[in-house]
View (spheres, rainbow, N blue to C red):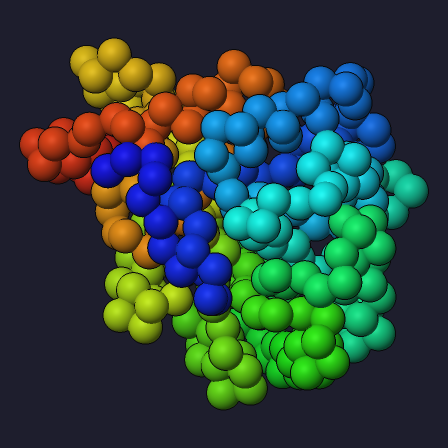
Length: 288
């Protein structure tokens, strides 16, 4: 594939290699970055390199990441799609606190609008806390209904879900159209295989997070060896595997380094042959 390959996110065509802005904030996604000017330059480099899909949230910082995006890129390029999320706030101790009441959802959307400098948000993901990086069953009717009302008001164009189960997706789809799902998924974390394929049949974008999360030492060693044979980094191979896995997968790797940004974008040009794909798939079954 090439970096120009795209997929529809709602009614917006976006390149499959995007950028996740979480690391633009300070340590622990809290407070300001050590170098605000560098963060601004990184965003401008991403756009100059062809990125037209940025993932963010107003609870990154909080507020700081969105403010940096606005300072760096506003007025925004016409083809840029900014995806944000609601469902949490930050404590003064940098803790992550659920914010799942209807008024929390409304406040979160208005916070994102204000700090991004927008009148309407392209896509808002309802982020359920669950077990932090794994979903947990439970109704999301209240939260999705609140987002659907904000969509009716014209403040939100499209709605997505994050950290959810197949049952929760079906519940949400009975209430409103869902254009994307963000869950943890990678070479070794394959619990969403069946769900990913079902969403592909529906034309719903799938946006995996933590492309290198949950690897055992043996699995990491196997990935590193394969990466070396391809003259690539483990992250590049992990991203290229995801791009080859299914055409509706959109990537949002995050970094605060321009060098790493360039490395991540280069993964879109990395050729993964079927023989290498088979070896990568086998890593999931490697023992600890």
